[in-house]
Length: 440
Image (cartoon, rainbow, N blue to C red; front, side, top):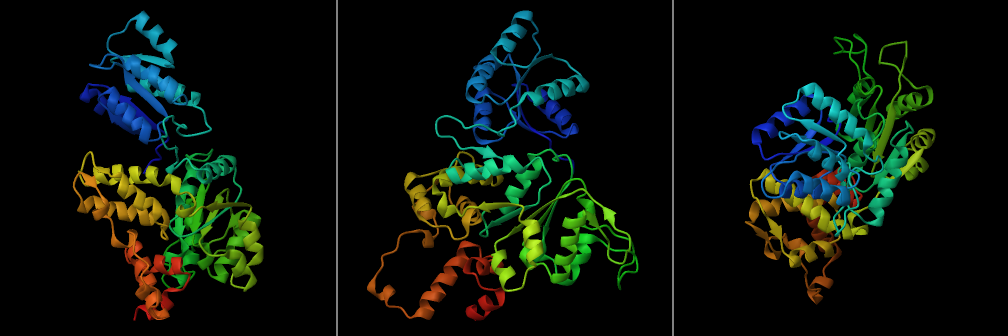
C-alpha cells in the first residue's frame, strides 16, 4: 500500500466535488478528510492532524473566507489552498490577504491540483503536526495524543531524532505505545517515503526469526526452496522496528550486532554480504540492562542499540491526558459501530482518571471499545467494568490469605487486558508458564 504523505482536509458543500478531490488526492498518495460545511471542518481540525486545508469559498451559512480567517488564528501551522467556481480578482486578493497560499478556479486538472498542493505543503511548520490548540484541546502528533509534560518531552525527543539514522531503543511497559512512537519517528522524518517494517520478535518462533529477519539462499536449509529476502532487505532505505528485542536468541543477537557495526546484511547460506542503509528502532518492556548483567543479552549489542533511549511513560504518570485519550477512542469506535454523538458523563470520566491502568493506553482503548458496544448515547458509571469502580476496604478483604489476594490480582489484570495471557504475564512480570500454573 502506498504511503500517505500528508493529511489533507477538503471542505466543499458539493459532494461530487468532495468525492472527485478525494480520488485525485488518493491517486497522489495523500490521505484526506472530507467536510461539507465549515462546522464539520472545525470539528475535524480539532481532533485530527491536518497538514493542508483545501476549501471552497462559496458555501451556504458560514463561508470559506471565514474558515480561512479562523484557521489562520487557531491553527497557524496549517497552510490553506482556496478553490472556487466563482473567480474574481477581489476574491483572490481577499483570500490571499486572509492567509491562503494559493487559489484554484474550477474546473481544474489533476496536474494543476498536484502543483498547487505541492506548492502549499512545504510552507507548513515542521515542528509539530498539529498545534497546541487554545481552549484546552489536546496535541496530536503522529497518532500520539496528549498535552502533559511527559508527552511533550516524548515528542521533543522524536523531533530531535526523526531526521537521522541513529539507532533508537524504546523502553516502557506493555501498552504504552512503543510502536506508535517508532512510527512517529519514521513518518514524521526525512525517510517517511521509504519502507517501515514492524517485526514482533516475540511472536515469531525462535527457529524462524533469523531467517525471517535476514532472508536465506535457496538450499540453505531443509525447506529453503527459493531465494528469499528478509525483513532487513525489505526495509532498506527506511526503518525496521524490532519489538520485544529482549526475546531474540543469541544467534540473532550476534547477526544484529554485525548489521549495526558493519552496515551490511548477509542472508543465511550466502557468503557475500549486502551493504544496507537502514534505521533500526528496537523496543522492549524488559530491563535489558538487567538481562545484560545476568548474561541473557549481549552487552555490546545493548550499547549499540541504546544510542538514543526513549522511555514511553505509563498512563498513571500522565493522567491529565486521559480525557483526551477517551475522547479520541470514543470518536474512533463510535464511528466504527455506527453510534454517532456518543458522550461520557463527568462522573464516569472521574472514575477513569482515578484508576491506575496497569495495562496502560491499550487497556483503556479496549475498555472504551467494550462500553461503546454496551451503551447507547451516554456512557455513565454503570457502564464501566466493576474493577474500575471504588471498593470498600473491609476487614474481611484485608484479612484474606496471600494466595487469595494473589488470585484476585491476577484475575483483575487478566480482565484489564481482555484475558491476553502474554500481556498479563508482562504486567505481572512473570513468564507465561508461571501464569498458566497459577491459573490452574
